[in-house]
Structures are given as structure tokens and as C-alpha cells.
Amino acid sequence: MSRAQVNVISITLIVILSIVLVGTGYLWIKPLIEKKQDTLKVEKLLSDFSQENLDSLPRKIEHVAKTQAEVSFTISSDGIWRLYPSSYVGLENNSIEFFTFSKAITGKISVGMWKSFVEGVTCPPSKGRIGEIPYVVCVRADTFADGYNVTYKIIFRELEGVTRGSKINLEKWTAISPETSTSRDIKIKRGDIYSRFLDTKTLIITEVKFSLV
Image (cartoon, rainbow, N blue to C red; front, top):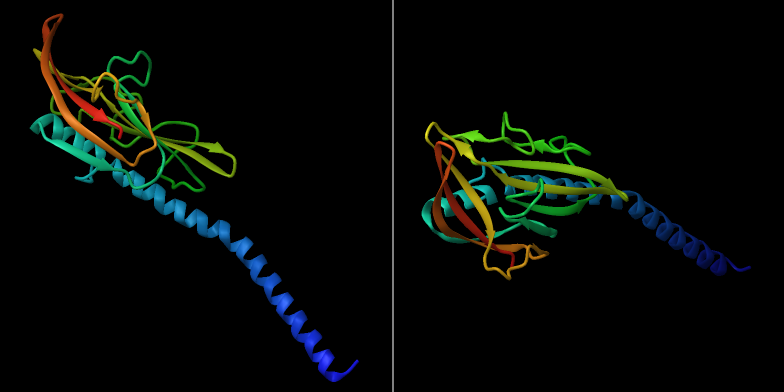
């Protein structure tokens, strides 16, 4: 075998070895990159539902209820919306949730159980007092495949006073509006405001309607 042939074989082996090493390194580092990206995604979604963020979904719902504004909201990640109107029979009654898959979570999210992000309030919440926050944000993660199914939920509760109470009722935009959607965008508007006399108290109800476009 000539020296030239030896050099060609050596170069070929070096190229093959380099390709194998690069491929192996990519397969090793890819999961780490994905977990880092998903950790950032989870943090951003927590901000989308945070009471401290003025542009978060719960704050926008409150704004609509108080001002009769019509607003839109765009979630920061792909996932599935589920609206449970006030007429829904079940524990999810009067709530809206966002469901997504992530390969990583943060210590702020519990696995297998709901965690409230409103201090002193449980998930699901009991009635509050007039002047308190009218909702509670609940988050949980459930293990699935090589990651987690993460659910972010906003539940609106009744606030009680001595002679009156108040409540924000979540409703569909129209009777035929969908209750689930994979769109990142939703629209929100205020509906009717009316009162009900319950026992010795008057309950003021404000409707907030959703279009999962």
C-alpha cells in the first residue's frame, strides 16, 4: 500500500470518527438543551398567569369585568385551552385552563397535586371576602412519557360581604362558541351584570365572555 493510500485512509477514518463524535455529542446535549428551553417556557407561562404581571390573563379578565373593555390575550406557548363556564357541573366550574407538555418544570410547580399561587387560598378555593382577589391561579404537573403534562388554571370564586356578595362568571362568547381550542389567541369581553337575592344577601354577578379563536 502506497503512502498516498495510507494518508487517504487515515483522513477518511478521522472524518468518520469526527462525524461519530459530533453525532454522539449532539444526542447527549440535545436533551439538556430541550430541558433548558422548556424550563424557560414554564417560567414564561407562569408569568402569563401571575397576579403580579399586569398583562397576565387573570388581570385582563379583572380589567374587562371592571371597565367593559374588549381585549385579546396571546399565550406564550402552544397548548390547549379549556373553558368551563359557570353553568358547568363539576369541580372545574367557572374556570379556564391551559394545558401543555414540557420536558422540564421548576420548583414552583408540584407533581401530582394542585398548587395555589394566591397566598392563603386553596385549590379549588372556598368563598372569599369582599375586597380580596376574586380568583385563584392553580398549577400542577403530571408525569407523562419523558416529561410532564402541565396545567395552568384560573378559578373565579364568590366574594362575600355582610349584606352583599360579588362574583365574576365565565361564559362562552356565544352559545355556539367552542369550549376548547389550540389557538394561542383568545378574546374577552364583558357580558351582563345582574343581581340575585340569596338568603339575606344580594349577589352581584358580572359576566365575562370568552372566544377561543
